[in-house]
Image 1 (cartoon, rainbow, N blue to C red):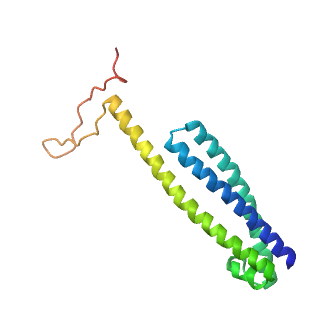
Image 2 (image 1 turned 90 degrees about the vertical axis):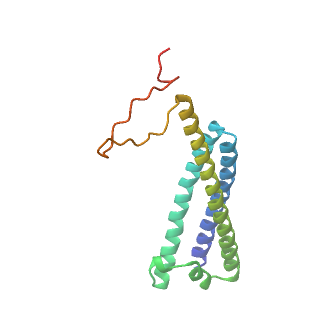
Image 3 (image 1 turned 135 degrees about the horizontal axis):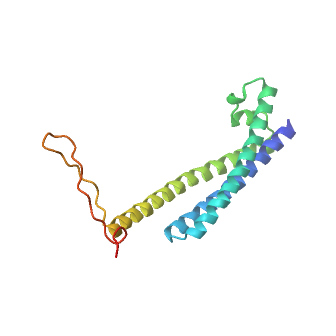
Length: 167
């Protein structure tokens, strides 16, 4: 059982380390978005993809540990929770698991908040880009036109300037 607990703690430690790095990258992403630094943003996204691959590998290992404990306890793997590991742990492993649980929970909460901030920043940038493109091309939002009988009527052709006009 000690080997299983050591393996489980090692996997959670590796996952914690990946989440720390993802959080650091999310902070850097916020700065890159704010400063409109697309080359940094591209590099950050590539680093995140590498870390997510690592996280998937660690998750597979974690599931293997859960499956092993479930087999030993005669339970379904889907029913295994952290408390089941704590119930079979010695004091050293229990303290380590509790500390990892607390830190992972905090990291994930911070990541969720930062992802929401980054999402809003990106949406704001996209709205600005759309506004700018509309202003440059002098596009207007299409208005609904109705014919005499109340049916939709075709909108008159619009003349766009700068981009769509021959000089």
